[in-house]
Structure formats: structure tokens, C-alpha cells
Amino acid sequence: MKAMVTGSSTAQFLARGEGRIAYEVSGTGPLVVCLPGMGELRSLYRLTVPALVAAGFQVAAMDLRGHGDSDATFSRHDDVAAGQDALALIEHLGGPGVIVGNSMGAGAAVWAAAERPEAVSGLVLIGPFVRDVPTNPLLVLGFRTAMAGPWAPRAWTAYLPKLYPGRRPADFADHLSAIAASMRRPGHARAFRATTRTSHAPAEARLSEIASPTLVVMGERDPDFSDPLVEARLISERLDAEVLVVPHAGHYPHVEYPEQVNPALVGFVERVARRG
Image 1 (cartoon, rainbow, N blue to C red):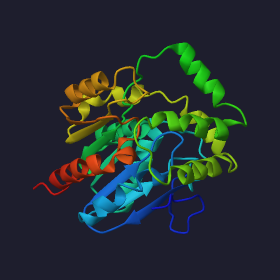
Image 2 (cartoon, helix red, strand yellow):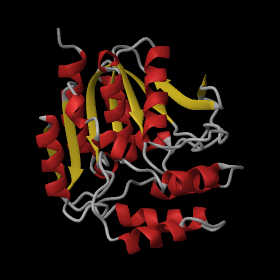
Image 3 (cartoon, rainbow, N blue to C red):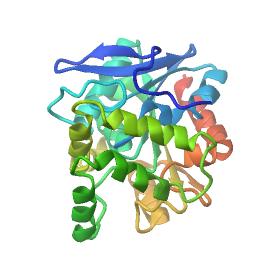
Image 4 (cartoon, one colour):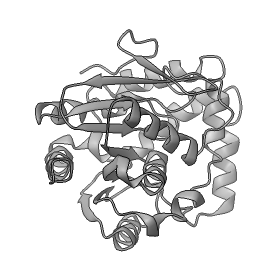
């Protein structure tokens, strides 16, 4: 399946005050909302959506503010803002819904589930940043500097392959091209830079409030964490979550190894979305 590109005619839009959030809906049934992370597009879920639709779910994949087809007119681009957008989309589509969040999208999902537990029937957290993980401050500064200038689209698409240490999908080059095209749109590089400065402290502060059933999916070789297995265990203990560790995978295990992730993800969503 080709990556969904910016300017897609299939995009729908949800007004959110300062701008519009783009999303794409497939299938019918209980709702699942898919939330990508920093620098990514809703097409990050291009190999996940068909499996959920085939299992009888309505799936809404959305773009973050200033990413993909979403407007770049917003003043905030943090976990809380993304969580508020996810809740607004769930309400618009007649939730409740399961939220699938990758990277900072996982932090947004956690915040949303704490803010409105009645609207979130379950969480799937993939390569999750739900806290500010201890990191060498020089590395953080170097990354932010590399992504700060007009060269950001090229720098980010050059960095992304490192987050796929396992098997890259056949359409990987097309997906990178779509990301670069999105970042060249007016205001989108600024929005991307803002996400690189996001603190996940608001998500961590609310971990104890989470009542929604949760599945944590972690790539065994995720380079964003010094020890991915320790991070997965920590999140699991704090959320009483199920854990799926994907061998050889990096930050996007659902893209690298969908044949391993999709059955577990669909099975989890079936249990929590249809309970009762």
C-alpha cells in the first residue's frame, strides 16, 4: 500500500479553534483512533488500519498539528494539545474509542485517557514516550540543533531510517518523501521544531489516573531508549499493562513487523472495545 501523501483527497477536517486537524476514516464498528508521533503522518498506520477494519472496527487515523494535512496555524504542539485533539475527534465520531499512540502520540493518549476516562475504552502505546526519559542533555541539544534550521526536512528524513533497525516496508522511500513534502509546507517545519521541545511530564503526572486497559508495544532495539525492555517494564508496572516486545524492531514495530504486531493489537482491541 502506498503512503498517504499530503494534500490527500481522502482527508477530512475537524475544526479546532486555531486551525483544523486532518483525519481519515475507514471501516465501520467500534471506534479506534490512531495518533502518530513527532515528525510523522497518519500514514504511519497504513499497515495497521486494514487489519483493524477487517476485524470490524471504524478506524480514524489523524495528523498532528502542523503535520501532514493538518493546519500549521496552532500555537501549541505538545502532548496535551494532541490529547485534546484526539478527544475532540472521538467526540465528533461518536466514541468512546480505543486510542493507538506512537512515540509522543502515546503521551497524548495517556493524557486523554486520564482527562476523560469515559471516552477512552483502551490504550495501545507503541514505542511510548509517557515520561521524560533520562537522556544525555548534549545529545538532546544536538538533536534539536540538527532539526532547527531550513534543512530540517532533509535532516529528519536522514535520521528516520535509524529508527528502523529491523525490516523496512517496501514503500519506505515513498513514506519518507511524503514526510519531507509535508515539512516543506508553510509553517510545518516550525510545528515540527515545536514538537522536538515537547515535555512528557504532563503525561507522566497522570499515569496513576489511568483506568483504561493498556497494551504496550516496544521494539527490542528501539534506539530512542537506552534500554527499551526496562522502559516497557516500567510503563507496564505503572499502568498494569500488557506488554508485547517485538524482536529486532525499533521505534515503529507495527510498521517493521506488522505480521507480529497486528494480531496482538487487534486481539487486544477486540477484548476492550467490545467488553460488556
